[in-house]
Amino acid sequence: PPRGPSLSLVAAAVRAPHGASPAELSATLAENKARPALDPELNDAYGYPIMSARIAGIDADATRAEMSDWLAANHLAPHFSDEQWRALSAGGEVVAELSANLGAHPLLELHAGQVARREPLSLPMLQLQPVWQADWKPEHRQAAALWFRHLVIQSGWPEDRITVAPDRGALDTEAGAALARLLSNEPPALAMLVTCGSHLGSGSVEQLENVSALFNANQPQGQIPGEGAAGLLLTDALQATLLGNGGEQPQLLAVSSARLPHSADQSKRASAELLQQLSATALQGAGREASAVALISADTDHRTSRVMELMGVASEAVPQLDPGVDIFSVGASCGNCGAVTWLTALAVARQEAESRKAAVLCISNLDPFRRDVAVIGPAVAVPV
Image (cartoon, rainbow, N blue to C red; front, side):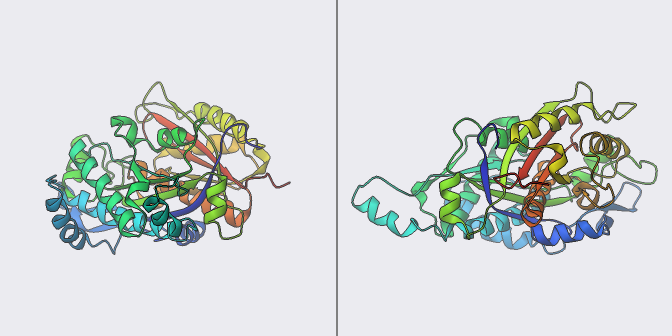
């Protein structure tokens, strides 16, 4: 059994360039054919189309129209960029999809009566934990968090049973930090972790070009911009039973995080040492043997430094895995989108842990410094 608290992953939702659900994206990644493509709208400084991973169906205008009236009514006036409107469109869909799972909660019907009679409330408090893109300012974060809260309430969840996690500044850009907090000694009964982002806009492209970090023929180690949204619904054992569909839900068993002393973008040689340490720590905390791991789901992209680091930890920690079959690299297919890329990899890990009934390592090495490893698997280890 895990040595610390674990949380049930009752549901996951994604909007990604190559899948509108974890199952669809997993199937695409398994085929190993999904790749970024020439962008139909964005060009580089020389007028050539950039490589990107774009979601075809995002309707940012509809989101802008829907949110604008609500923002005005709530006296909020943030100026969202085109990229942020795209992100909010995808993020809103993820929040609505996860919220639909809450509609099946058997204690919902009792709640209004308990409030009216001033009885103790049985329905748990839902903790909404957003994870933001690093360049989102406090006013963007506040408005988006309240909008997501509004969408949850709109789905039928009581307004008095939802709380938005306090803004923690830079820590709120790190999905690993948010998950570690949720897995602390007093995990919440019910939490929704959600993130969204888009790097598909002229401003984002220009920023990458200005620091020579955009992928092109002359810069093959540059980043390929992506976009999307991802979310997880996490619960304790009781809420998982109440919300469950009869089957065992995959568990978030452990999270281990640290920072590299030097940027991976500047290092001459990729080192997997830190990721190997984190993997060992996470597996120990999860109460799982490395030999029980059936798959790695990572946010790794196409860059040589990241690929070599991932392959280094795979060959050392889980040599039983076939790199061509048992390692999914979300970033290589869906581009770079900060915390969205790893949370998407976590949603894929949940999907694979459920279908394989086995432990999955979920690795983050997209960031220049931060490294995260999570273990997701069945509540009870299945003999190999």
